[in-house]
Length: 171
Image (cartoon, rainbow, N blue to C red; front, side, top):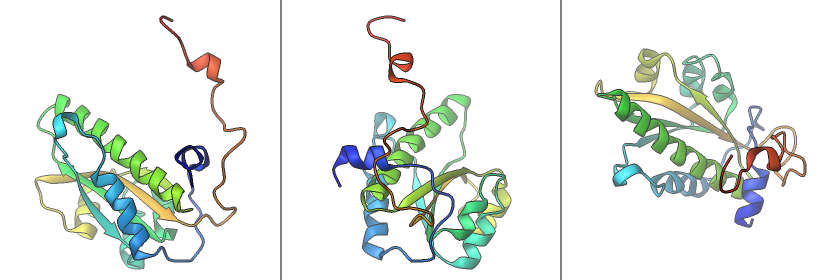
């Protein structure tokens, strides 16, 4: 798929077909996250790839918007240092946002759908994933082949009009 087609095809997928994702494709998605830009090349992330059904079911209980994780073929948990300040929390969120969209676009390029989720229950996430106490898991990304229709460029995305969003030179 061309880069633009992957961007135009990417949509949030929360219902997945039951088929697994090839290990090489999962590694490619993880590599996209690893290569993502990061403020001052900090790279505050670690990624935990989860494919075990029991673990996916456990992760689905970590937040009100995480139910779709249970049906995914794989979910990547983004793990970072517990923020020492509000400024560090903002930097982590920005860097993790870049890693998230890199992995989602790489997945779309492979025909794999994705849907992100926030993590509220850190104790449950730590119990399922086993990350150390000085780390936390703010986000997860569920991956799988869409159950309803394959990914294809969206002709009319549900977005504000271009001319309403884009300003040139000034407001």
